[in-house]
Length: 107
Image (cartoon, rainbow, N blue to C red; front, side, top):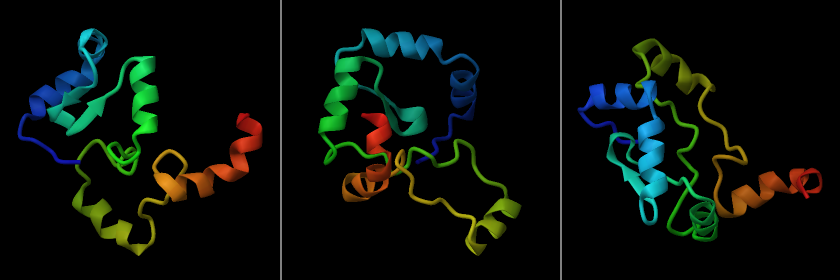
């Protein structure tokens, strides 16, 4: 996730995201949020569209930290505490493989 210089704007969105959610519901199509370098998908039909367009949209960074990591954390993570693939953060074949054991309970 690319971090922009506008930390105050990001802090404001964390404190009160509801105006952004309202804007997303009124927007035609998907809403890009530059402060988070991400797309906000607010309506059911848009969620369905995104799920059908795996080549255009990815879940790969969905579990990355929302805040910059401290030097201490960055020093520890390479020792085996880094991100692991999950159903939420995997795309395509990796997603299908991770979801397979869950399918029966989700159907």
